[in-house]
Image (cartoon, rainbow, N blue to C red):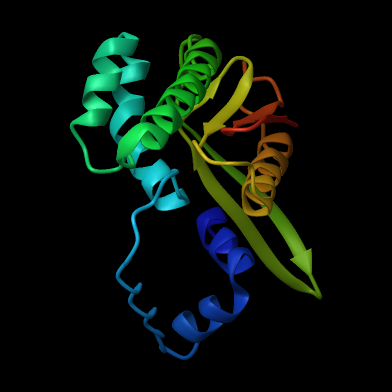
Length: 185
């Protein structure tokens, strides 16, 4: 069982079973068009802004260049509230980018295909997953959003697989960077 497939199942068991066992894909309803102007960032706008700005920030772009890049897009709400929200979001993005640069500064180790043999109700299973982003300090994952239960679950499963089949030279530690906190296992 690939670890990614297990994570798909654990995130939404009903959707997984409908799609993979029954071949049924239920489409999501279209989002209604917004009829009012937002004053603050919502999750989709924040995610889109982070997807555009974080690569530049990780490459060392200064605050003014990042601000100009943000204002060139469509994610920033209009008006003074939007500009104020942008400044707070830029500060949060800067902290996140700085943390990400610090924890990923160490060189990568070679790719590792971790595997774990399990027996469940007399059935032999093999859980496996690639780990291409290992460092001597362990596994580092980052996602610019508030830490959610699915993030904790994903970090925990990757950590269990890392502990069960550690590569030589890597610490059995998993660090998950989120917008609001850092989880260390």
